[in-house]
Image (tube, rainbow, N blue to C red; front, side, top):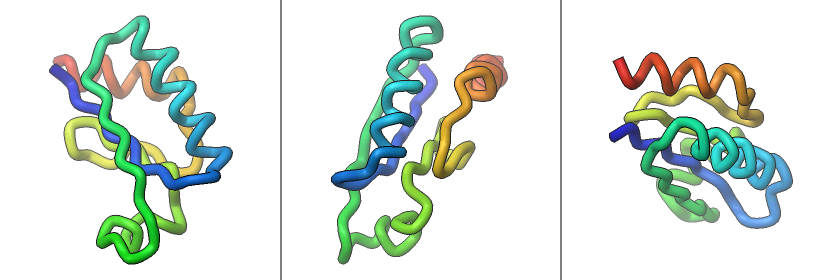
Length: 81
């Protein structure tokens, strides 16, 4: 099964928008969803803190800042092949 990871942080409007798009698309194209909340001091925060939300599909970074619904669907279809 495809694994989609969302790196997000507290009080992040873009993170909430990204999560909404991911959940919406998940109804059409099933995938395992993991949200990782990052905070200052975390190793992941040093890598992604200024670019959240960051979305990975099967460990490949595919989006940061915004998630485009149609592009997400295309990337998920490609991952299923």
